[in-house]
Amino acid sequence: MTAMRTHISRRGFIAVGTAALAMPAFIRDARAQEKYVCKIAHTEGVGTPITNAFDAWAKVLNEKSGGRIDAQHFPAAQLGGLAEALEGSRIGTIQVTTAGPDSEEAIAPEIAAFGGAPGFIYKNEAHVDAVLQGELGQKCSDIARAKTGVEFVAYGETGFRHILSKRPVGNLADLAGLKIRVPQLRIWVDFWSLLGAAPTPLPYSEQYSALSTGIIDAIDSDVFSIVGFKFHEQASNLTLTGHWFLPKAVRVNAAWLDSLPEDLRDLVRTSAKEAFAEQRTVNRANAAKTLEDLKGLGVTVQQLPAEELAKMEAQTAKLFDEFGSKSPETAAMIKAIQALG
Image (cartoon, rainbow, N blue to C red):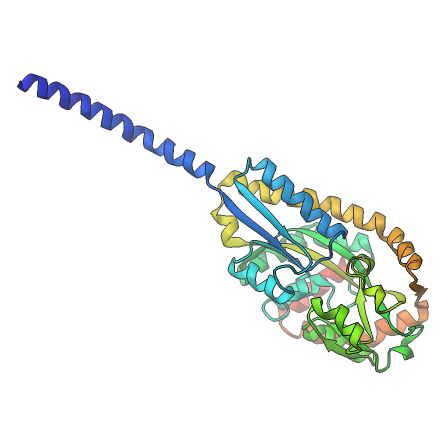
C-alpha cells in the first residue's frame, strides 16, 4: 500500500510540475488573444480624405491584428465635438482622435506652432513635410506624450484654409467687422482681431447652424470640409487666402498604446504612418478638383490679390513674437519651423 501511494504521489508531482511549466506559455497565449478596443472619434466630415484614411486604417488594424484590435470609427462628431474628442484622447475614454497641434496651446504652447499658429508660418506643402516628417515632427510627438498623455503617431492634413463668407471678401478692408467663427483658442482670436474681423469662438460642430442663423458671417476652412459639411449651403463666397495650414496629428492615448503587446504597438505606429502618407497624397491631388466641385455647387471663388495677402501677413506678423513670449521653448520652436521654410 505504501509503495502504491508513493507511486501515485510521484505521478501527481510530475503532472503538477508539467502543468506549472506549461503555465507561462498559456498566459502568453491568452495575452496574445486579448482584444483591445480602439475607438477612433473625430470631427472631420464623412467622405473627406482624412475620414477615408481613418476608414482604411481601421480596416488594417482589424485585419492585420487578427482581430485582437477592435477598431471602431466614429467620424463627424458622432461622439462629441473637438473639445470632447481631445479630452477623451487624453484620459483614454477614446483611444484615437485627430486635431491640429495648435489645440495644445494652453498645455504645450511650444508645439502649438506646428498647427499653423499664428498664421502664415507654413510657406508651402514642401515646408510642411520638412517640418512634420522629420526630426521636428518627432520632437512634437515626444512633447505631446510627456505633457498631454497622447502620442502623435502620424500626421494627416486638411490643407490650406481659406475664407468662406456670406458676402464677398475681395480685400483686407472687407474683413472689417466680419463675424468669423474661430476655434476656442486665443491665438485664432488674436489673428482675426488684428485683421479687423470680429472673431467668434464656437465649437466646430456649430458652424453650419451658426451660419444659418446669422450668429456668424463666415468661417475659415479647407475645401474638403466645406463640401463634407455642406457649409456652402449657407455661405457661397470663397476667397482663397491659404493663410493657415492645418496639419492633423493622429493622436493615440499613450497609456492605451503602452498596454498593447509589442507587435500591436508596432502595427499601430507603422500602419498609421502608411495610411496618412497616402492621405496626404490624396488630399493634395484632389484639392483642385474639389475647388471645381464647389464652383459647380454655386460657390463664387476668387483669389485674394497678392498685395492684400502681403498686408494680411504683415498685420499679423507680430503674433510670432507674442506667441513666442509664452516660453523660451516656444520661441525656439517657431524659429526652427521658420528655418526649414
